[in-house]
Image (tube, rainbow, N blue to C red):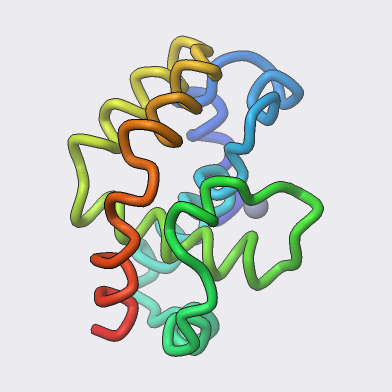
Length: 131
Ligand SMILES: [Zn+2]
């Protein structure tokens, strides 16, 4: 499910090839969506992410900067939490970001994420992590 979600995301959301896709930090979305859809489709509880959430390690705004240099907890468990939060609580922002990703407007997406969203949801994300 995780890998098939990558295929669908790569085919229908992320414009162009892998190098284009990660020309800005998009890993939170790529791995987070694959985890979110995988666990959601299977109706499985993500105990890994739940454990991480209880520790409140990262702000949402920090997760937007996740790259392949970060550890698996941050890439997968925290990517899952970021996508879960945004899809279910901030769908308009997800639609906006995907609009940019689907046209390969990487810098516009990055600007939207860093400037329009920025730290605006950090407090709400932190609260949501404990729910
Ligand atoms: Zn993956």
